[in-house]
Amino acid sequence: MRALFGCLAVLLGAVSISLAARYGYKGADTAVDGVISAVVFGAIALCAILFDAAAVRLWFIQHRISSVAIGLIAAAALIVTFTNSLGAIAARGDSTLAERNRVVDIRKDDRAELSRLTGERAAMVFIPTTEEVVRSSREVVSAAERTRKVECGDGDPKQRGNNCRARETAEATARAALTTAIANLAATDRAAKLDADIHILRKRLAGGDTVANPNPLGAALELMLGAGAAALTAWQQAIVAAVFE
Image (cartoon, rainbow, N blue to C red; front, side, top):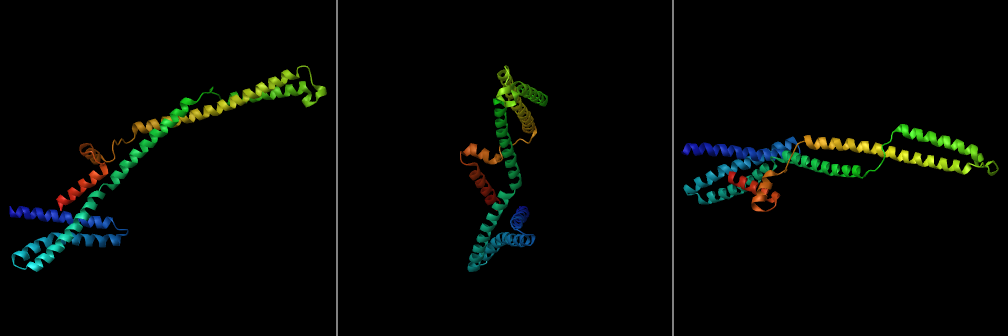
């Protein structure tokens, strides 16, 4: 039994040292600083393990002052190692959590954009029009303008014919029809663009990654305990680190 607990202590000690060293390495800005931090944090974790045993041993062989001094150092090392382990546990899923948050944000933005586009598309009222219709309307305007110039003398009152007013009205009507055709063509193009964008968004929402909650553990704890997900997750991580250490 003693050998079993000894092996377990060695295994957990190695994991604790590795966890602290990894946290020190990943928290540095450069590789050199990372190695230095890893060695320092790993050494502190090693001291937290060995100095406890040394303090107990010294106490039993009657070196009480040395035992208390080393015990205080071991306690300080344990606190540092605990915080390092907590940082390592809290940071171990940063990339995954960031990716899950990114997926949630993208889908939220896509839904908002889809709602905006479908609302704009539903509000559009127009007659679908092609370039050929606009071109034909321009030709009608040109013909009406030529007819009006012939009948009205191109602005000279002395050459104004009996049907000048009718020709002016016909030209104005043709120009109004051209304006309407141009507006309908612009609306047609816009509607086609909206339809294409809506199709892309719906396809992306239907086939993309689905994340119900970026922090499922925090959400579950929040449902059970009724507090903030982030705070509960932090406490859970602290408990894990404390139990481990």
